[in-house]
Length: 440
Image 1 (tube, rainbow, N blue to C red):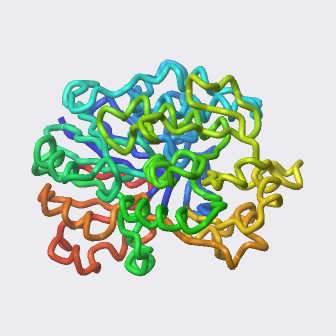
Image 2: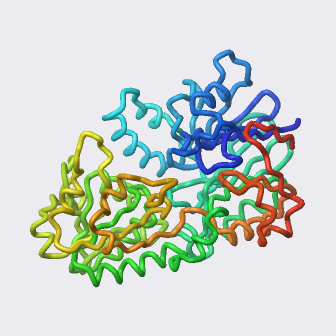
Image 3: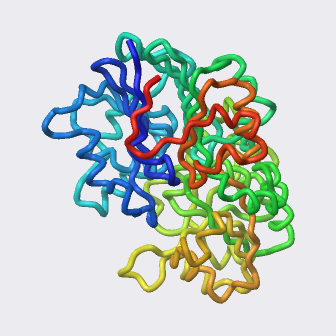
């Protein structure tokens, strides 16, 4: 029985990903992501169109046996509310817990609620085959990414073996000590089809110029900054747990760690879930006693049992601190809680740990720009990519020896075979268009 692959969105853009693999009258969908701002090209399906295309109300497509989410970034799960009831949805165990925290907060300000759908998601059994239909089965594998508990999939479809990478890398905490190579050798081996992300293909120069190539590099440099500066304010995604844990462990013993209740809940969940696997996901201790979290804003039922205490900014200014912050995104507020704190500080160092593109015209994030305004001379850029470098993708190709290579989640699909590291495999590269059916 033959199989078909259709990437409905993501062949020539980053994010908004939706992929379908069909065998006979059965199919699975991998990711159902909302389109990123700026991805509104005329030849790209809108969010509304993709819902109707993948799950048509007239029943013109075969039954969908499952939707598999690679991770909790919105451009991969964001359209989950539009998935018809009754279709099983899957996500990693830890990722699901983190997503419950995210969606519970979103539900408080959104009319259409989603927490019940997140709670109904089934967690993956890592490294175990899941059969969805005759000739269609999937093995989920934990992979390194800026979203904790992300997944790639080994898929058997119509007698062929596919590796779907999702978003991945090999320079974070999950991949330390050669874990990535070990996983590929043990669970993947040679494949017929490699479907790989290529986010960094359009950012190769940016990556080369960055002195921080790994999360470990980031943690080391952060420690130097925190030692030298009394007031440290860190702009980082609240769910980029690898970077957050590096910052958390880099805080000097004589300074406080500050965040809000949302960030604390995410961090504590990650620690609870991953501490037995990765040393950097353990509670930091000072002379054997767990480091306190000082919470700005509402405590949200956190307390001493979680090592959480209300932040007193006056006392923290005397002590010195590292504070995770977020810019104001509420149009009703002139300033958010972290901007108000920033106004009270004497000479804060702003550690910017996000993509540089958010500060430039094409992808400008005005909320971030407003947060930094007035402190431009006191900004330290400490960030490493959540995606695979060219060298990592080349290593994966060599290890899996695919007959065909399909790039996606990239703006450089057409240039893929021209990249020096990929040229030995140029004749294997197959560039698809959105919605194009690829028959295995």
